[in-house]
Length: 256
Image (cartoon, rainbow, N blue to C red; front, side):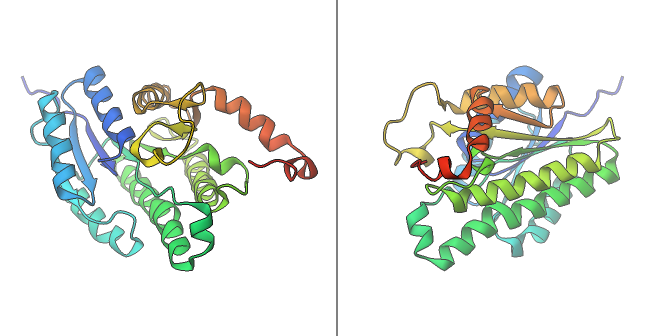
């Protein structure tokens, strides 16, 4: 009797802490998944692959190496990924730059790099897999966004702008496939995540912070329930509801 092929999950930004946690959680819940791991650092990406295979991932899992955040590289890398997995079941977009607001304000090249990495290339990847899933007739796009995209704030408005713009893309693709039972989009909006990317932030810890493992658990549940948008953890939904509702004069008296 022929066995079913394992589920194929493409991860863009496979060395991120959230991506690793999500991949491990999927193996724990679903068993021998086939991964196509895409990342810029070959050594780190292959180390992640070895870890996942050691945990039970399908042995045909593989890596694709390149600069995912470069718009000029998206078409070429997409060709490599889809050659390895012509009919993937799910795509997780988990790469990005955080940047530092004051440094970005002082450097137009750094601002351009942030916009290209977090929004332009990410939107292109979303469209690549939207078309891929149209051709297959099924698939799930999962995007790691941020609560920073909910309202412009002086502390991180350039980063927030990239996440807000990407959210509009995710919303639009979800609306595009609203009549389909088989093509889905899930946008995950974390708050503060305790990762090396946030080591420079003072006062880490507390109820507003979450581990990569917690974000992975929330993401997994949201994907299985076919949620279009989810805050991670849930408390951010209500925090941002208040922040978005603040009148401009009140907002401008804050230091957020």
